[in-house]
Length: 425
Length: 138
Image 1 (cartoon, each protein chain N blue to C red):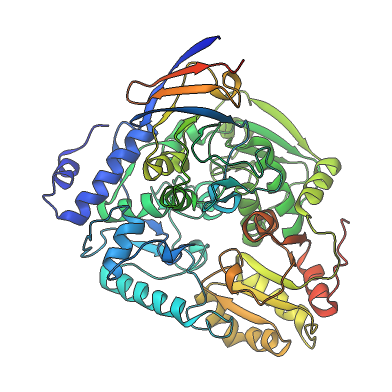
Image 2: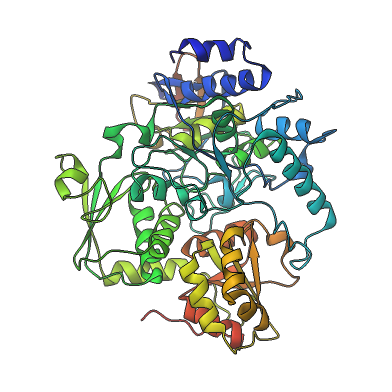
């Protein structure tokens, strides 16, 4: 990989050890990708507030801890100030309500240490899987470097900005240096469609877009699907959030097109760049049924826990769930945890949604998510219900629980009755 | 014993050899792997409950979570890393994942490694030269 003069300077240590370490990682990463060169970025979504095994390394202080985990070195590297504008992915627990969710004091102390590190080094704590909901909305064509597999297709497909799915290590190196390897979805031709999916049904709900994404991910894997809707319509943010998360769980969809909807697909021809699709697929009743069945791993209708907000609930979803819970009471045998971004909870507080949710006996939580807080779940959880294909997909592999997948309405019915009564309609 | 030589390019340098564990399905290390045990846990994966520790892992690429390199590092720290990796098509997740896994890794081979190599074959890798030597299991 060719380095520009300023990049070589960084690699030579002329701009400090932290940038040098970032450039060392990028040089290896770029070579691993087969990238010819690096390009500039000023928009990074970092992963720094969560690690599944924080006890895995010993460190005298946060600088050493961050160096070991995120700069992948035993050398204690002092970061002065991160170069790029950045936001942060989810943290290990609700930063404010950690006690309500039963998180241990030790985790709170670790999160406080990381929080102080972030403040000192210019890292913006948004603590969400949905940066695009809380102040990081890239512009058309902007080169970004985002973690979170469900946020990446939002950046690429919905906004027309450009990113690959970055990770804790690559994103930190990119944020330190302001450089990202020119590869994958930063390059025009890689953004073109590979598979045409004729969507024969009209996906009119978040539930349906989740299943469409789950089918697509499993089918196209690393491809770029082009959705051709037989019934024209414009999906909402909540629907696309579900589509994106599902397709990046059963597969690795980082980019897609919806003909007539997303910015790089005014026509089928534009979506494929005039080329023929590698494969033409149909999504109809049978495919929908298979996605539904693949998502439902649970058999026991007695549910212990319902978790909503994967990815973090939108304002629309918070309004809807508050409406469904108004005057209701969560069953004694179950827990209902609803996740959103800190900033959206502030709006929910002001609008009374939080009061309604809390009065019903549920928790409205922020910053983390059900997939990273399984160790903090109340004891005795065996069966989880959710309206998220992503969560239903990962729950058995991550936590060992079986999952029910259905609509928000079915999840709330389950929360109130303690029984899963969902079905494919 | 039949031998096959594949040529490709380095992802992460080094040389190693070992028994192949092959899948034609993509892998998500976060959410699909028990990193401390080095075992695939994804519910509908063809390698479910199988260990990749000390094997030469042959797979198409990464899907899923951006926690890929976090878990690749955990796998390495837990001593459960594969001896080497052969990836059909590198993407951002597998590229940085291989870097922090610190296992010799190759990609862009002249034949599809998930077709040519079978689980149990003996595989020798010189990642710096991009060469893979496969000795078929009899």
